[in-house]
Length: 421
View 1 (tube, one colour):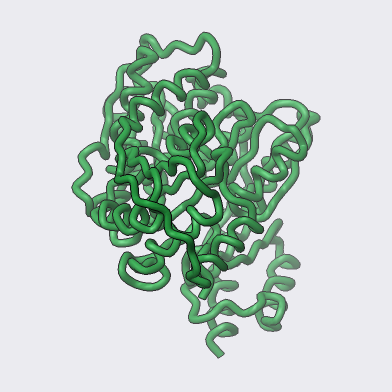
View 2: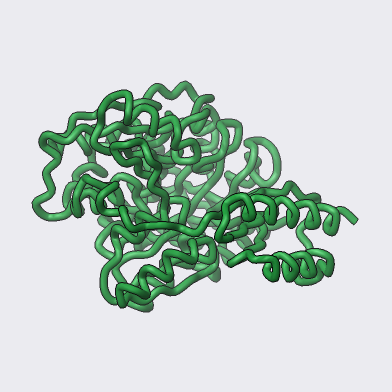
């Protein structure tokens, strides 16, 4: 069994790979791998969060500090700014409430490298540990401490006095921090998704359902909308007219010399527009860890994904939805005007639930269908498996939106037949 997907361990609590023994074992493995020193634990608002925290903390032993309900970047920021050995975030991001997960950040606050993650997984399965004395579960007001660190990352001179912001916290990890951060800068905030009950995180709200916020922006006459996901490490924006501004557009708004790091999911139009501006563009595999590696190697200012997961060289080691939004707004709140010339290629994304994940290149029927669709006018086709779910993602871009949808559905049908044989 492989524990880690694209972004940590994820699944239904109590079922593999997210069982009590795995949570306990992960705590033991983190302590064995990263040594003594405090380990910070943060969580989102899911009902299973406290139970998982107790299992992980029991495995860690030593000094463990509970930060409470905080965004993923809060754990990252606090680890980076202290002598902590590591951090663990209990979250399943944009997944439904019944799922949960475990993300590990290393002593510098960033996501683990593939090599470090593989070593950690091997330790979990090996199950041989030196137990340290449990010093008890300490507590810290993680939300307030994170807001202090966030304030130091806000673009110089940014004020939101007189700005009205519609905010969707998805009943998730940003409920205690995002409204406070925006109000501290002078904004008037109309917030939704701020009444978590353990079972409503991402339920029809948040970054995967931005149209709800789009309607809220128009209804409240807000200048802009900020839509967070369940662990508040990414955002989608909405302009004052109710038009959704996705991650590709965010990267364009944040772009600076010498270039931008994107992923294979980024729209072809983004690459063309950056080239027109004389800026470089590099694609990586999906996942913020991959973006982070190239961003650091190139020394570039910004990178990210169409999902709204953005990494800023001047920000925290992991993405932060609120901080991303603030850096965008520092360039002006009139998003519609700033994006007046932005025309992404129409695209269609179909998720195919699959019984298995064979090598895509081994699927002859699917390869032939992809070649045929490109000849029929599709501008780009991307086929990739989800790192956290049993799904094949079929992305098609084409000059015409109807063609993109038709091509994507056709490919999805072929894929399911090929994989189910």
